Amino acid sequence: MEAVKILDKADRIDWEYDEEADVLYLSVNTPTPAVGIDIGDSIILRYDEPNRKITGVTILGMRARLLQRLEMDEKKNGAITV
Image (cartoon, rainbow, N blue to C red; front, side, top):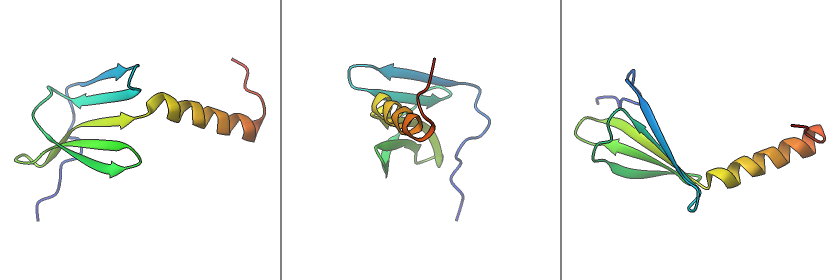
Protein backbone atom coordinates (compact mmCIF):
# COMPACT_ATOMS: atom_id res chain seq x y z
CA MET A 1 0.00 0.00 0.00
CA GLU A 2 1.43 3.37 -1.02
CA ALA A 3 1.69 5.94 1.75
CA VAL A 4 -0.25 9.19 1.71
CA LYS A 5 2.03 12.18 1.22
CA ILE A 6 1.23 14.57 4.04
CA LEU A 7 3.52 17.43 3.05
CA ASP A 8 6.34 17.18 0.61
CA LYS A 9 8.43 20.29 0.89
CA ALA A 10 5.91 22.87 -0.22
CA ASP A 11 7.04 25.76 -2.37
CA ARG A 12 4.45 27.83 -0.57
CA ILE A 13 1.50 27.63 1.77
CA ASP A 14 -1.25 30.17 1.20
CA TRP A 15 -3.94 31.03 3.71
CA GLU A 16 -7.20 32.91 3.77
CA TYR A 17 -9.37 33.68 6.76
CA ASP A 18 -13.12 34.22 6.35
CA GLU A 19 -13.96 36.38 9.36
CA GLU A 20 -17.72 36.20 8.88
CA ALA A 21 -17.74 32.39 8.77
CA ASP A 22 -14.78 32.04 11.21
CA VAL A 23 -12.97 29.64 8.89
CA LEU A 24 -9.24 29.38 8.13
CA TYR A 25 -8.23 27.91 4.76
CA LEU A 26 -4.67 26.69 4.15
CA SER A 27 -3.54 25.61 0.67
CA VAL A 28 -0.31 23.79 -0.13
CA ASN A 29 1.30 25.12 -3.31
CA THR A 30 -1.22 25.97 -6.05
CA PRO A 31 -4.79 25.06 -5.05
CA THR A 32 -5.97 21.99 -6.95
CA PRO A 33 -9.24 20.07 -7.11
CA ALA A 34 -9.52 17.83 -4.09
CA VAL A 35 -11.88 15.81 -1.95
CA GLY A 36 -12.73 17.13 1.51
CA ILE A 37 -12.21 14.63 4.32
CA ASP A 38 -13.62 15.51 7.73
CA ILE A 39 -11.07 14.22 10.25
CA GLY A 40 -13.10 15.40 13.23
CA ASP A 41 -13.00 18.38 15.56
CA SER A 42 -14.19 20.59 12.66
CA ILE A 43 -10.99 20.07 10.66
CA ILE A 44 -11.26 19.14 6.99
CA LEU A 45 -8.31 17.91 4.94
CA ARG A 46 -8.34 18.53 1.20
CA TYR A 47 -7.00 15.40 -0.44
CA ASP A 48 -5.84 14.88 -4.04
CA GLU A 49 -6.87 11.26 -4.57
CA PRO A 50 -4.98 10.52 -7.83
CA ASN A 51 -1.69 11.82 -6.39
CA ARG A 52 -2.42 10.60 -2.84
CA LYS A 53 -1.43 13.82 -1.12
CA ILE A 54 -2.86 16.48 1.15
CA THR A 55 -3.40 19.76 -0.70
CA GLY A 56 -4.92 21.84 2.07
CA VAL A 57 -6.60 22.13 5.43
CA THR A 58 -9.79 23.92 6.45
CA ILE A 59 -10.30 24.75 10.13
CA LEU A 60 -13.83 25.69 11.15
CA GLY A 61 -14.34 27.96 14.16
CA MET A 62 -10.77 29.28 14.22
CA ARG A 63 -11.46 32.43 16.25
CA ALA A 64 -13.69 30.55 18.68
CA ARG A 65 -10.93 27.94 19.19
CA LEU A 66 -8.34 30.62 19.85
CA LEU A 67 -10.53 32.53 22.31
CA GLN A 68 -11.44 29.31 24.13
CA ARG A 69 -7.78 28.34 24.43
CA LEU A 70 -6.76 31.79 25.66
CA GLU A 71 -9.55 31.68 28.24
CA MET A 72 -8.40 28.25 29.43
CA ASP A 73 -4.81 29.46 29.71
CA GLU A 74 -5.92 32.58 31.56
CA LYS A 75 -7.84 30.51 34.12
CA LYS A 76 -4.90 28.16 34.52
CA ASN A 77 -2.16 30.79 34.76
CA GLY A 78 -3.99 33.86 36.05
CA ALA A 79 -4.66 37.06 34.14
CA ILE A 80 -2.70 37.56 30.92
CA THR A 81 -1.38 41.05 30.25
CA VAL A 82 -0.80 42.08 26.65
